[in-house]
Length: 233
Ligand SMILES: [Zn+2]
Image (cartoon, rainbow, N blue to C red; front, side):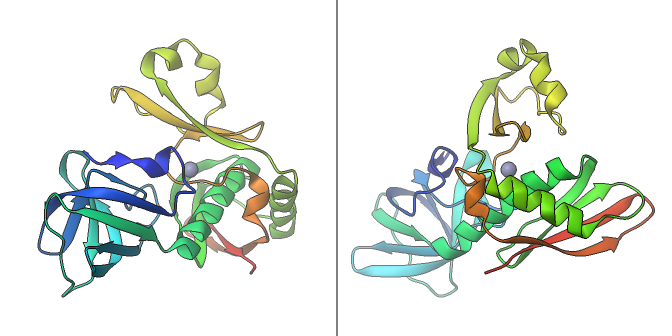
C-alpha cells in the first residue's frame, strides 16, 4: 500500500520515496505525491530521478492492494527495489487539474441535478447532468464566477461510518451518497457551497480557480445534458 501524500497536501510538488516494486514499465513507491487515475481525474505525470539517472513518468495508476504505480516512458532506465528516488510533478498540468476539479464541484452546486458522469483534463472538463430542458449558459457562467470571486475555503476531512451515522444531516446535504463499509470516507467541503465524498486533488480556496467559462452544452439524450467548462488563460 502506497502512502497517498497528495490526499493530505495537494500542493506538494516534490518528494523523496523508496522503491517497493519494479515491473517492466512501472515503479511503486512507499509513498507518493502523484495522483492515480480515478474519479474522472487523470493520473499525474512528471519525473523520477535517482543516483545519476532519471526517467519521465507518463502516467500514474492504481495497482493491487492500494499500490500506486508510476508508469515510466518506454525504454527508460529503471531504479532498483530499495533505492531512494526523487519524484517531481508536472505541476502546471496537475495545478490545472486541481482548478478544473474544484470548478466541477462549483458547477455541481450551481446545477442541482444528479451527476451521471464526468471527466477532467487540463484543457477542458465536463459533467453530465440528469436533467431535461435547456441551460442558460450566461447565468451559469455568472454564478460560477461569483463563487470563484467569493473565495470560499475548500477543505477535506476523513470521517468514519459511525461518525457519518451520527450526523445524518451531513448525508442530507450531499448529492452523492458516501460509500459505506470501507472504514473511513474522505469528505470534500466547500464551505456553504458543496459537501460530498471525493478522493481527488482540490485547491485550498475557490479564488484559485481563476477565469472559468461554460463551453458547449451537449444534448446527450432526453435526460442527459453534458456541460463543458474551460479555464480562460
Ligand atoms: Zn473532488
